[in-house]
Length: 186
Image (cartoon, rainbow, N blue to C red; front, side):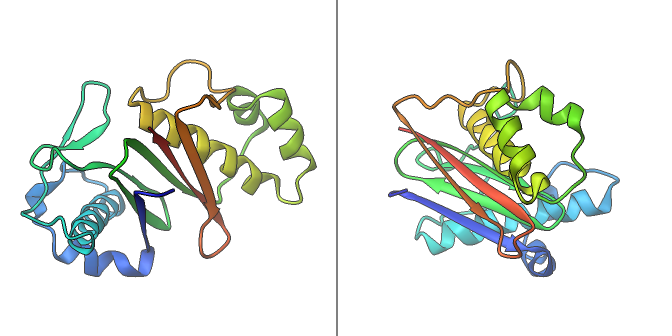
């Protein structure tokens, strides 16, 4: 995707990313792992802004009414963040709204697959060599689209629109145990 840059950091990089971030920059939580994920994602955002030559000051992350994060003091930067057990991810866009999701392997129930996936997707998951990973590919695509739209997880998740005006990209995580997907609305 031209004009879109994705940044990914594995668990072993989190401490270094988090060390740079002012602790007041994120919402407080008693869950230390979640706190570290959020700090690392924020640190990766700062690193991304610096690498893209856009750094001015520590970004102030706010949330729109339905939860989509945005940068209060970088109105010219479209971004989104995601974190999971093994990775944090950030996407910056010069072309339009973006959403990103990263997920790693986890137990997937038949009930979840039926709730989230279309019949065609369910068949592809059932026939895949690794159904859990195939499900994660679909899940990250759907969540990236929802995050791009800023609606949160609501409505019918069976289909991710393939309308004109969207670009979607998906890639396995470096360890092959998950997926990263990005959606761009032009």
